[in-house]
Image (tube, rainbow, N blue to C red):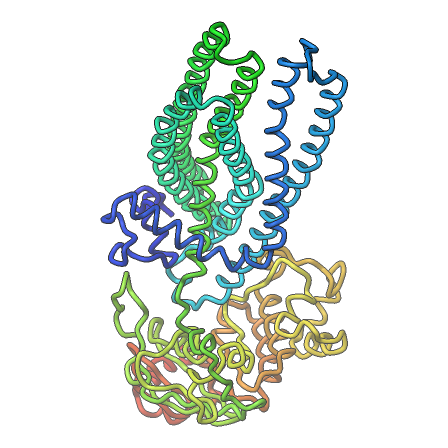
Amino acid sequence: MSVSSSTSDGPSGPARRFGRRSSAQGDGAEGGPRTVDQVAARRTLAALWPFVAPYKGMIVLAFFALLGATGATLTVPLAVRRVIDQGFHGGEGGVPLGGVFLGLIAVVAALAVLSALRFYLVTWIGERVVADLRAAVFARIIRFDLAFHDRARSGELVSRLTSDATQMKSAVGSSISIALRNLFMFVGASVMMVVTSPALSGAVLLAIPFVVLPLIIFGRQVRRRSREAQDVLADASAMASEAIGAVQTVQAHAAERRLAGAFTDAAEAAFRAARSSIVARALLTSFAIFVIFASVVLVLWYGANAVIAGDMTAGELGQFLLYAVFAAGALGEVSQVVGEVAQAVGAADRLCGLLAVDVTILRDDRDGAGDALAERPKGHVVFDDVRFAYAGEGETTGPPVLSGVSFEAKPGSTVALVGPSGAGKSTILQLLMRFYDVDGGAIRIDGVNVTAADPSRLRHLMALVPQDVAIFASSVRDNVAFARPEATDAELREALEAANAAEFVDALPQGVDTLLGERGVTLSGGQRQRLAIARAVLQDAPILLLDEATSALDAESEHLVQEALERLMKGRTVLVIAHRLATVRNADQIVVLDSGQIVERGTHAELASQGGMYARLADLQFSDAPAA
């Protein structure tokens, strides 16, 4: 649970984990900051467009509201000029002051309405797009194959869904709106400055390159440092999530102080990364404000001399100064929000990177592969020369886990998988459910290769009762009906009774509506196991997978669970993993694995008489037990 990866990983680490293109594809550090920013920005915009496109009408309305509000603001200096040049002097063609100010009130009213409309529309679009993006990313994550989740950390993924999405929502809902409003204001005010006084405009516009160039340079640094800060924060969140999820183990080993110190170090690293981003933004804002308003002061000095010389009226100078202030203020405001926009682009890039991850297991499904399995298969399972190794670091492959494994489970039969830890037993079940694809050979159900079937349909035909049962922080009803949420109360009750779980569930405060707490901490191991069996009963799948379902239970709980399992196994094809050989003595076939290979197979009586590995295991377990 070290935080060292937070610092050594850098911004490129999460990029690799979450499927971004490598430098060899034109987006690495070798291409330089300019290349990285341009490529990342284009990629992010392309990835975001499907989420923005459905709301084009709202965007158009927001655009016109923004234009209208900008136009209303830009009419104010015209009124000020008229008041100064004509209203005060009351000369020929002068306009009564009352009329001028009534006109200003109308302009202000229009500005208020259009600004409110613009704020509502832009904020609505930001909330809507981010909500859609967050939902799409979660839907994508939850469908990733296990090879991805083997490498990723759940806390970091949650951080992407929360902090990155929140940061992006804040920027899209406010910062981008502010940036666009001020950009329009700057352009409009600059045009009106030129119309009012081309000579004075030249002096102001000359200062623009001195502002824009630092904006570009500092903006890239802000974006890079913001991405680094978010990556470090995600690593810290992942570490915190991991520690909180295993808090009992942490406290049992008195590791609270050590982990608190490690998280403090991670939080400090995140603070330092954020501080670096803040410094860059502060320098950018300070420089922009000084250059912009210094140019306004110089223009005021030049304009005052022009009024004294009679080259322009006081009203024209006032109008020009207001436009100059509008332009300067708008540019200064852009310099402040450009960092937030850059952070939003970085957050969106990380979220869209998750959408770009290649999902190997679902590739056939995405390409429209049909479901080749029958509606209710017989459950004839065949492993034919299966070879498999888990992926290692990068593109490498780890050591072989299964080497040429072949066996058959006929419909309605029970096949037991036994052998030492690490022999590949659990991997066989994972391959059957197609959590991973085999490297060689084939796995078939009723003659259909599992790679030709839709993974969701394939897994729906199997019920898994694992050793480590997943209990969600919801009610008993929700947990048991997880695979069949439409199940009736009668079906739920029948499943609980079949699993020997009805008695303890009835004793809970709210019965089946009792909330169980995170990971079912309020239940014993045997109770969690029986709820898992009830879940499998309700699923009513033709193939049943039992992975050490009774290994961690006391004698009484094991007896209740074993009774429930025997009822569940009837009429189904069963693959069972067990270290306790007493639970598999009646299996139709026992397959003994060692180092990823099948070393023996047969019934209990056959294997016990051969003097091989199974016989040795049986002697160890049954030597002190009475003969059956």
